[in-house]
Length: 266
Ligand SMILES: NC(=O)C1=CN([C@@H]2O[C@H](COP(=O)(O)OP(=O)(O)OC[C@H]3O[C@@H](n4cnc5c(N)ncnc54)[C@H](OP(=O)(O)O)[C@@H]3O)[C@@H](O)[C@H]2O)C=CC1
Ligand SMILES: N[C@@H](C=O)C(=O)O
Image (tube, rainbow, N blue to C red):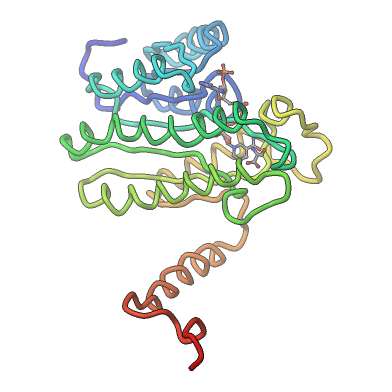
């Protein structure tokens, strides 16, 4: 990686070996950012890094890591803590899981939660103090519209993505006043390997977005500093209404007593 000072922060992207992460890598390289690419498949990362650095003239480091493995996760955390050039974290690595809840084994549940929630939180926690100290930087967390409302066969996956949205909104509250931009991106079905990896045929879906269109839309939200970007949502007011209703509900929470409908009848 360059030791030359640069105006553009380096970007660390998890899950950069394919799909959404690989397109983020290409787009940030095109914008002139140096990159740190993270995933398990080193040969794919090396090939992407070689192509992007040759095409765009940026410096690219590859960090092979299985983010469900404690030692690997710690290595990425250490990089985020110590490398002052990294000013943007794209928390993208994730996996899907479908099927009935009663059929899911403990190991599969652990792996899903470790990758989709624990790693996302730990990596944000690793970079945040340094960004706060600098008073600048961005954290982008890739959630999913599946995290907005429960769907049959997606219970644990959806719960992990609801966590990502909640985490992002909490980080916005805490970090925005300190100059940090936090974005939650919520794709719907997008044409990537995630479907095949989870044993699903993407071609059986009625509608699918191309991955380049998804990332380009997410980057428009990023450039506008949107807190929540939902590229497939065609009526933006729907999100405002949902978020507003949640805040409205909070105004009717009274902590001192149970609501009248829960008062024991005399
Ligand atoms: N595609 C879709 O329809 C949607 C996707 N999303 C979200 O987008 C994100 C990216 O997924 P997408 O691009 O679609 O899928 P892909 O399967 O194409 O990409 C997933 C990326 O995560 C990496 N990854 C998987 N497991 C691990 C692990 N244990 N440790 C480190 N890296 C890992 C993979 O690389 P490697 O195998 O080399 O480790 C790969 O680079 C995910 O968070 C997903 O939930 C959200 C909504 C819809
Ligand atoms: N990744 C997809 C589900 O498997 C999604 O979030 O839509």
